[in-house]
Image (cartoon, rainbow, N blue to C red; front, side, top):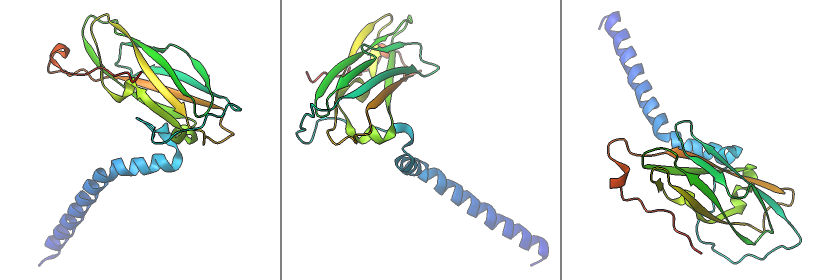
Length: 192
């Protein structure tokens, strides 16, 4: 085998190895991102959603402020706002509030809200029992709707955390290929 063939074979092996490594890295990106978020607290992912698994004792000696923010993705024309910008809760106490969404466009649309919590250390202690973010939210042209949020702050929340910010980013997920009116999407259910 001459020197040119050896260099070509060596290059081919390196290119194949690089391709396999890139595929493996791409395949592992989502789990690696989740681990990264868990370690750094980045993204404030909510871990506690749905029905509560135990009874919580209300700590009447302590109050925690929960602030609400609403942000739209740049391509989302809806208006989303909390009915209350802030509430005070006692750890262990169930609270209900709502966000109001308005579709000011002339077309039916579907949205999905993605929550985030700050500080990230508070994420394991904020339980969302019922939330509009659990399901896709369809709104007709010009329609406005109050969307419920039922939450509870765990009584195990560290004492140094006195304020939690719950932020929602709203994304337009209206399918491009079919009209929204033909999509069967259930609105969020209220547990109350």
